[in-house]
Amino acid sequence: MGIGNTTAASAMTAAILEVPADEVTGSGTGIDSEVLAHKVDVVRHALATNQPGRDPLAVLRMIGGFEIAAIAGAYVGAAAHRMAIVGDGFIAAAAALVAAAICPPFLDYWFAGHRSSEPGHPLQLGFLRQQPLLDLEMRLGEGTSTVDIPYLCRRTMRWHRLSVLQTITESRQFQASQELPVPTENVVHAWRH
Image (cartoon, rainbow, N blue to C red):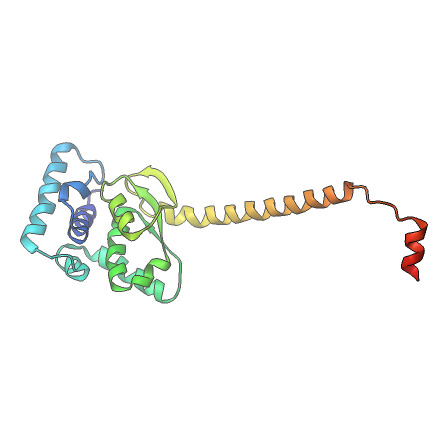
């Protein structure tokens, strides 16, 4: 679609993590190398012109997008209600950089849904100390992992329950198959008295 939110996320990531624009800026929707070079220049220009520093709120205000601000606010609100949060990809992780600065305990509730193929995403995840739940080599998740993760969690829990039940059943079958010694008359007589 090419609406520019990976450009804003790249600029935010470069500012907050203090890394060069070309290390965090990727092809987004699949732009060619010429357009990518222009995108990197746009990120560099935004950083040089606005000089947001590393303060996440200043970064968000000066070079972030409204959608990233909304996501960061939703993250903090969800964490305040102790809700699990699945962040989906590079743009969502840019919002997480801001949310973690505003409310560090937010990270107790946030899970990286998938690893984006955008070059800045591994840097974001490293800074946030997160391992993605999925690595499907998606460029743009568009919420895919937020749909997949609950399903996969339910399936994993069901598999775990079934494996526990199978283990219990096998244990009972093993115990039933063991020959127990038959008590002698002397032991039975001594026990009764």
